[in-house]
Length: 429
Ligand SMILES: Cc1cc2nc3c(=O)[nH]c(=O)nc-3n(C[C@H](O)[C@H](O)[C@H](O)COP(=O)(O)OP(=O)(O)OC[C@H]3O[C@@H](n4cnc5c(N)ncnc54)[C@H](O)[C@@H]3O)c2cc1C
Image (cartoon, rainbow, N blue to C red):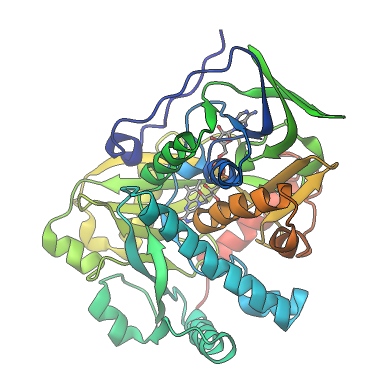
């Protein structure tokens, strides 16, 4: 029998409460749509397809939310991962505006799912994105002005160093954008909540049921080790964990590993110093640092990444220096948890939406912006399968480039490029 992975030893797994558990697939079954992967993309697709009356089966290799969806920083950012100036250059002002609005709608969709279905996932408000270099402060100020002037967005404001200091003791920051449209949450509780909603709508979820083979001829057939699903349509929702399942789209994304630590609970004064108003926080470096408080007052700090197939042996020791660089006063605080996850990034940081043949749909490569965008991807995938491709095509038509090679370590030049940019983080101002 194959060994299936349980949740990684994270603060999220320790605090998510009893996980819903689902049987594995044994024997043959059928559905209108088969979805491979039970992260936000797969679960949101399942919910929105079921709401449209489709019979849906979800196959998850491990556990619901086992991938990036159960391990991430929990930041629910506005807009798209690429900034509006880049989008305007790539697709023109009007389409860039539509993409911006879709990004706002994605945050609203997360909130709507949480509120409508009473998903208890510690939903909080506001993100403070800070300039780690003086030159980045000008960029942030420009971005706030652009969003207000050109997009009518009034929830973002620029804060200078003194104003920042009132909200956080983070050191080395030169200014920041406070975005009160952004939200933050407990990612694994959110994933579990989505699975419960999907089940309540009649979706059948199978855990510990990795798809090993699929084909899309007159109909779709997906084989697992002990069963099979026949369906009229297929959704590939594996993102950074796609592996060799679909070689034709594997080269569109690069899987990278990112790491998070959770401290012991901080005192009230320490919590207030980290973030006075319980916003999530992040900085402007290429290898971004991102952090927030947990519901029980721990600092959840994400920092550092690697591009190999292995995680560092000592993840706590790997991430801690990034945290201490920003909060040196936390040197005596114990680190209780350290974990990593794999996410898919694209060349231009815009997600990769598409079709293979006429019945197989996919969305991947959310590039660190997947809490809102993968949730929205599920809604757009469901609409596209149901014949309404307008917004799916809006995402699919943003030009993307394939990575040369196809799977991890076949592109040493790109890894060298990532390392070059991460080195720049350490230099200059
Ligand atoms: C450390 C970290 C921090 C992050 N922080 C943030 C953040 O703060 N904000 C943000 O917006 N985004 C963040 N992200 C990105 C975000 O988590 C992802 O974009 C999002 O979760 C992607 O969801 P998904 O459903 O597409 O993929 P995943 O959640 O990775 O799910 C894919 C699922 O597919 C399953 N699978 C793979 N192969 C098979 C198979 N053959 N058969 C069956 N199942 C299979 C996997 O087991 C997995 O459960 C972060 C990611 C990481 C790793």
